[in-house]
Image (cartoon, rainbow, N blue to C red; front, side):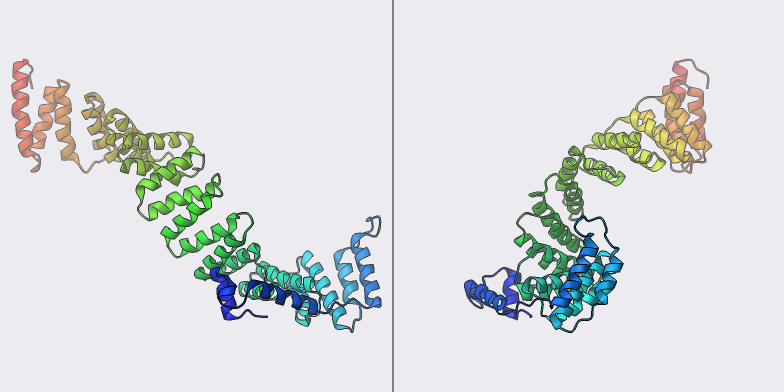
Length: 424
């Protein structure tokens, strides 16, 4: 039977049926009346004996040592000549269940559907075959069929089964009907005796697929009330906050996830480091990257080392930043990594190290040769290498961008060298 539109609406939105259709006790009484009115039949004696023999074959008799293979049991049941509709229905559903145990789901569905369509089984058995048809349809990825059979089951039993609602939510999700997915997941949550993660997961997935990250956040928060130690809610919650550009909550959620040991992917830590940097904690960003590069979780490549160096630079740890750029340069042979290392070593007043880095940048064909030569003027000057500083200053006169600076350096170097009686 199908539910009337009013009853269905009341069930889905959780309204009291008494407000729209009839008092609950009347509805329950009607259901009980239908149960009592359903005839209770038994198998004919001949068929009953054959079924008993088949069950003995299947269970191995009293000692359980002589079990027959299921295909043999199925063949025996299939060979029974039946005329009575109830016998046909009972044998068909029993054979169908055995086919299902053998993994022959299409045959199982065919047999059990035949039994269900006869509609002569006992109340419980009829309800059971309708639900089994839904489960088997789900197994066979016949999602609309699964929904239809679950609806028939509900129309027959009027029972609120959270597992049924979860299976319907899954079926709707596979059919990309996300509104219905959420609707059925909500019913599964509402009628569950104890919270189950599956319903929340399906609801969250529906919102993710529709890019409704704000609602996905709400689902995660609701789920965490019941599953606070389950990592599958923490990291997605942090990521949804990112999608919503709520970076403060994203950072705090990532930190809580890390404290509980839930971060286990390179992207988790690179994102955490970015958030530290964004919120003015670059040293922690650098340490996060360095720790997980050293552990091997984050790949030790030039890109990741360069990012780490940049965080150290932001934190004003110039020496560490320079060393990390040098490590990146050894892997990349990128002259820009050498140049940046030179700049940072110069800031840290390690002029000898800066000169070595700048020369490496030149050796590897830097396109910023003029800028590097200007930097070499300063590095050599502060090391007292006035002759070298003067040489680079003269070469820098060829650069339109740096000519005026070079002229200033030339005068300054001459004066300093003269005062110190150094020949240039």
